[in-house]
Length: 146
Image 1 (tube, rainbow, N blue to C red):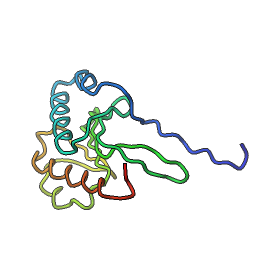
Image 2: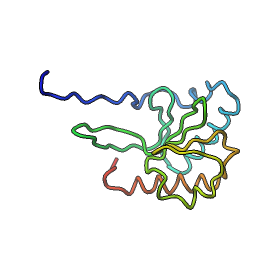
Image 3: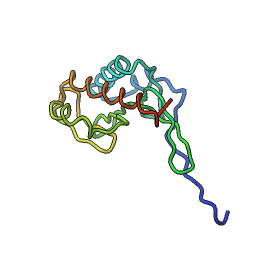
Image 4: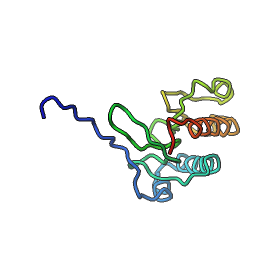
């Protein structure tokens, strides 16, 4: 189609796959245990039901955003057990939370990703505060109304 731009469709979408089955299927025992802890933490903080997004992301809450002429559904917070580290997705980003990050422990960040090798590397009460503040910020932002 000459003159028309086709927008790429997001590959990661909400699925009907079982979150408990996904977590139970994690081979590494320590990673599986950390994911069970994260599942409980995210449920407690977000009060949202966990859903699988693609084959390996556990997401909580929903929002719709627009990029160009396309609208997409996405989660407000989530996590994924990656080979190199646990990846926590906090869609608000981390810049507003420098005070909490200073107390968190060992981690690295990307734009909306927090990478943690293992939960024992971080202060769990601080992680809970960080997640709660990020989630609250996203829920209160009218651009991300679910």
